[in-house]
Length: 190
Image (cartoon, rainbow, N blue to C red; front, side, top):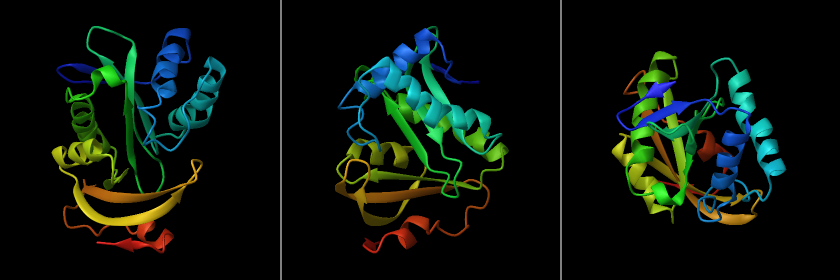
Protein backbone atom coordinates (compact mmCIF):
# COMPACT_ATOMS: atom_id res chain seq x y z
CA UNK A 1 0.00 0.00 0.00
CA UNK A 2 1.20 3.51 -0.85
CA UNK A 3 -0.33 6.61 0.73
CA UNK A 4 -0.18 10.20 -0.48
CA UNK A 5 -1.89 13.35 0.78
CA UNK A 6 -5.11 12.47 -1.04
CA UNK A 7 -4.76 8.89 -2.21
CA UNK A 8 -4.31 5.30 -1.17
CA UNK A 9 -2.83 2.95 -3.74
CA UNK A 10 -3.50 -0.67 -2.91
CA UNK A 11 -4.08 -4.00 -4.58
CA UNK A 12 -7.44 -4.69 -6.15
CA UNK A 13 -9.45 -7.20 -4.17
CA UNK A 14 -11.53 -9.85 -5.87
CA UNK A 15 -14.68 -8.84 -4.04
CA UNK A 16 -18.01 -7.32 -5.04
CA UNK A 17 -17.02 -3.74 -4.18
CA UNK A 18 -13.76 -3.70 -6.14
CA UNK A 19 -15.17 -5.63 -9.10
CA UNK A 20 -18.12 -3.21 -9.37
CA UNK A 21 -15.73 -0.24 -9.13
CA UNK A 22 -13.51 -1.79 -11.79
CA UNK A 23 -16.58 -2.36 -13.98
CA UNK A 24 -17.40 1.34 -13.71
CA UNK A 25 -13.88 2.26 -14.85
CA UNK A 26 -13.54 -0.33 -17.59
CA UNK A 27 -17.03 0.10 -19.07
CA UNK A 28 -16.71 3.85 -19.71
CA UNK A 29 -16.03 4.42 -23.42
CA UNK A 30 -14.24 7.75 -22.85
CA UNK A 31 -12.00 6.34 -20.12
CA UNK A 32 -11.05 3.42 -22.37
CA UNK A 33 -10.73 5.35 -25.63
CA UNK A 34 -6.92 5.35 -25.44
CA UNK A 35 -6.47 2.08 -23.57
CA UNK A 36 -5.46 -1.18 -25.30
CA UNK A 37 -8.79 -2.98 -24.93
CA UNK A 38 -12.46 -2.52 -25.64
CA UNK A 39 -14.71 -1.38 -22.78
CA UNK A 40 -16.19 -4.25 -20.79
CA UNK A 41 -19.95 -4.60 -20.55
CA UNK A 42 -20.60 -7.06 -17.72
CA UNK A 43 -19.33 -8.02 -14.30
CA UNK A 44 -18.22 -11.33 -15.81
CA UNK A 45 -16.10 -9.43 -18.36
CA UNK A 46 -14.64 -7.40 -15.49
CA UNK A 47 -13.71 -10.51 -13.53
CA UNK A 48 -12.08 -11.96 -16.65
CA UNK A 49 -10.11 -8.72 -17.04
CA UNK A 50 -9.04 -8.96 -13.40
CA UNK A 51 -7.90 -12.56 -13.85
CA UNK A 52 -6.03 -11.86 -17.11
CA UNK A 53 -4.49 -8.45 -16.44
CA UNK A 54 -4.39 -7.67 -12.72
CA UNK A 55 -4.04 -10.97 -10.87
CA UNK A 56 -0.88 -11.98 -12.83
CA UNK A 57 0.81 -8.79 -11.60
CA UNK A 58 0.16 -9.90 -8.01
CA UNK A 59 1.52 -13.38 -8.73
CA UNK A 60 4.61 -12.10 -10.57
CA UNK A 61 6.72 -11.59 -7.41
CA UNK A 62 7.90 -8.05 -7.97
CA UNK A 63 8.12 -8.01 -11.75
CA UNK A 64 4.82 -6.25 -12.48
CA UNK A 65 2.75 -3.87 -10.38
CA UNK A 66 -0.96 -3.00 -10.43
CA UNK A 67 -2.58 -0.61 -7.94
CA UNK A 68 -6.15 0.48 -7.35
CA UNK A 69 -6.32 4.25 -6.90
CA UNK A 70 -8.59 5.16 -3.98
CA UNK A 71 -9.36 8.60 -2.57
CA UNK A 72 -8.23 8.91 1.08
CA UNK A 73 -11.13 8.06 3.37
CA UNK A 74 -12.98 6.08 0.68
CA UNK A 75 -11.91 2.52 0.00
CA UNK A 76 -13.53 2.32 -3.44
CA UNK A 77 -11.21 2.34 -6.48
CA UNK A 78 -11.68 5.30 -8.83
CA UNK A 79 -8.84 4.30 -11.12
CA UNK A 80 -5.75 2.18 -11.55
CA UNK A 81 -2.06 2.59 -12.23
CA UNK A 82 0.28 -0.17 -13.31
CA UNK A 83 3.79 -0.95 -14.48
CA UNK A 84 4.28 -3.88 -16.84
CA UNK A 85 6.61 -6.72 -15.92
CA UNK A 86 8.15 -6.64 -19.39
CA UNK A 87 11.50 -5.20 -20.42
CA UNK A 88 9.76 -1.88 -21.22
CA UNK A 89 8.47 -1.37 -17.64
CA UNK A 90 5.56 0.41 -19.32
CA UNK A 91 3.47 2.70 -17.12
CA UNK A 92 -0.29 2.69 -17.65
CA UNK A 93 -3.32 4.12 -15.94
CA UNK A 94 -7.05 4.77 -16.14
CA UNK A 95 -9.31 7.01 -14.09
CA UNK A 96 -13.06 7.62 -13.84
CA UNK A 97 -14.08 10.76 -15.75
CA UNK A 98 -15.38 12.65 -12.74
CA UNK A 99 -11.83 12.59 -11.31
CA UNK A 100 -10.09 13.92 -14.43
CA UNK A 101 -8.14 17.19 -14.25
CA UNK A 102 -7.61 17.00 -10.49
CA UNK A 103 -3.98 15.84 -10.58
CA UNK A 104 -4.87 12.39 -9.26
CA UNK A 105 -2.97 10.35 -11.85
CA UNK A 106 0.03 12.66 -11.52
CA UNK A 107 -0.02 12.24 -7.73
CA UNK A 108 -0.38 8.47 -8.03
CA UNK A 109 2.45 8.22 -10.58
CA UNK A 110 4.77 10.41 -8.51
CA UNK A 111 4.10 8.23 -5.46
CA UNK A 112 5.03 4.96 -7.15
CA UNK A 113 8.35 6.16 -8.60
CA UNK A 114 10.32 5.91 -5.32
CA UNK A 115 8.82 2.48 -4.73
CA UNK A 116 9.83 1.32 -8.22
CA UNK A 117 13.36 2.68 -7.75
CA UNK A 118 13.73 0.87 -4.41
CA UNK A 119 12.42 -2.32 -6.06
CA UNK A 120 15.27 -2.12 -8.58
CA UNK A 121 13.25 -1.07 -11.63
CA UNK A 122 15.90 0.74 -13.72
CA UNK A 123 13.49 2.90 -15.77
CA UNK A 124 9.86 3.30 -16.76
CA UNK A 125 8.50 3.99 -20.21
CA UNK A 126 5.06 5.20 -21.19
CA UNK A 127 3.48 5.40 -24.58
CA UNK A 128 0.40 7.35 -25.48
CA UNK A 129 -1.70 8.09 -28.53
CA UNK A 130 -0.54 11.47 -29.89
CA UNK A 131 -4.18 12.66 -29.75
CA UNK A 132 -4.31 12.08 -25.98
CA UNK A 133 -2.63 15.32 -24.94
CA UNK A 134 -3.65 14.93 -21.28
CA UNK A 135 -1.49 11.80 -20.94
CA UNK A 136 1.47 13.65 -22.42
CA UNK A 137 1.05 16.36 -19.80
CA UNK A 138 0.96 13.80 -16.96
CA UNK A 139 4.17 12.17 -18.18
CA UNK A 140 5.97 15.52 -18.40
CA UNK A 141 4.78 16.50 -14.90
CA UNK A 142 6.31 13.37 -13.37
CA UNK A 143 9.67 14.00 -15.05
CA UNK A 144 9.44 11.68 -18.03
CA UNK A 145 10.91 12.96 -21.29
CA UNK A 146 9.97 12.37 -24.90
CA UNK A 147 12.25 9.91 -26.72
CA UNK A 148 10.62 8.98 -30.04
CA UNK A 149 7.36 8.26 -31.89
CA UNK A 150 6.17 5.22 -33.79
CA UNK A 151 3.15 4.16 -35.84
CA UNK A 152 1.34 0.94 -34.92
CA UNK A 153 -1.74 -0.88 -36.16
CA UNK A 154 -3.12 -1.13 -32.64
CA UNK A 155 -4.70 -4.39 -31.56
CA UNK A 156 -7.28 -5.49 -30.68
CA UNK A 157 -8.92 -2.25 -31.87
CA UNK A 158 -7.26 -2.61 -35.29
CA UNK A 159 -6.72 1.12 -35.79
CA UNK A 160 -3.57 3.01 -36.83
CA UNK A 161 -2.13 4.96 -33.89
CA UNK A 162 0.81 7.32 -33.69
CA UNK A 163 2.37 6.68 -30.29
CA UNK A 164 4.78 8.95 -28.43
CA UNK A 165 7.24 7.17 -26.15
CA UNK A 166 8.48 8.80 -22.94
CA UNK A 167 11.03 7.45 -20.48
CA UNK A 168 12.28 8.18 -16.99
CA UNK A 169 15.51 6.56 -15.82
CA UNK A 170 15.30 5.64 -12.16
CA UNK A 171 18.70 4.01 -11.55
CA UNK A 172 21.13 5.80 -13.89
CA UNK A 173 19.98 9.16 -15.26
CA UNK A 174 22.30 8.72 -18.25
CA UNK A 175 21.15 5.19 -19.12
CA UNK A 176 20.27 4.52 -22.72
CA UNK A 177 16.82 4.87 -24.20
CA UNK A 178 14.63 1.77 -24.38
CA UNK A 179 14.59 0.73 -28.05
CA UNK A 180 11.96 -2.03 -28.01
CA UNK A 181 9.13 -0.05 -29.61
CA UNK A 182 11.53 1.50 -32.13
CA UNK A 183 12.72 -1.93 -33.21
CA UNK A 184 9.23 -3.48 -33.31
CA UNK A 185 7.73 -0.88 -35.64
CA UNK A 186 9.02 0.05 -39.07
CA UNK A 187 7.48 3.53 -38.97
CA UNK A 188 9.36 5.45 -36.28
CA UNK A 189 10.99 8.85 -35.92
CA UNK A 190 12.24 11.38 -33.40
